[in-house]
Length: 258
Figure 1 (cartoon, rainbow, N blue to C red):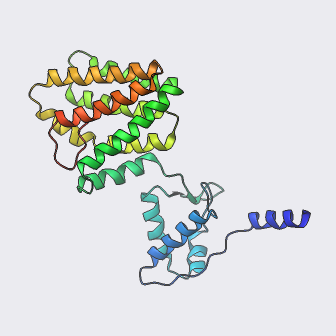
Figure 2: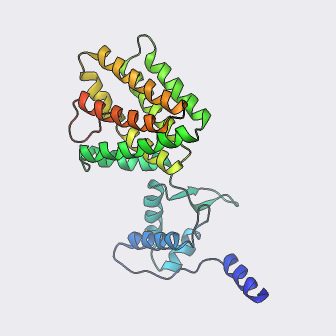
Figure 3: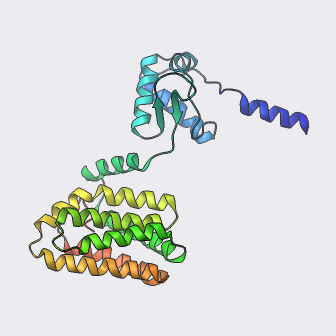
């Protein structure tokens, strides 16, 4: 047993061995090689990649191919690079940040890659889950942020721009109050990706005061249900809000208007 433990410890401490890759578009093979190691569990958050010159030699590609692969994966939030020298310098595996997820989703939405019915259904599923979790075991700090967002929306003379930002923050705060980081990240990505299209629709509404009153009442109802621990009412209220908002605003097929 001791020998096996020693072998396992040596294997864990030894640097990864990389095999050469060959293709016309070398950076795509570098990306494939990195992704394969991540999926296999050989690379984890915080692990460094070899220095550029060494990495290129191991993969038998140009340094330009390595640099391009790193650039692509950095833009996707998979890697992060710290220039300079010392233990903190180099390229490391990073947790996928929410801004990267939001950026990618926003581009897909802008290109009309998602049907409006699909976006609405996804939002309903996510927000029903998040308010249910928030009602059962809420994060009180995040609930306080949701209350702050409601107060901003209810302030006298609030502009539609500020209202829309507060509306976005309200839904994100409730998702984060659920304690489920993945649900919160997906909810935030979808809701933030729709910030601009929703604002454009709000600016076209003639009877803004009436719509604003309706939205504020729906937000208060959702928050009250969550704070009361009534998960069923919270889910029902969240779904009704998303669907009624979709019916109240006129947005083309690129937007989920709630």
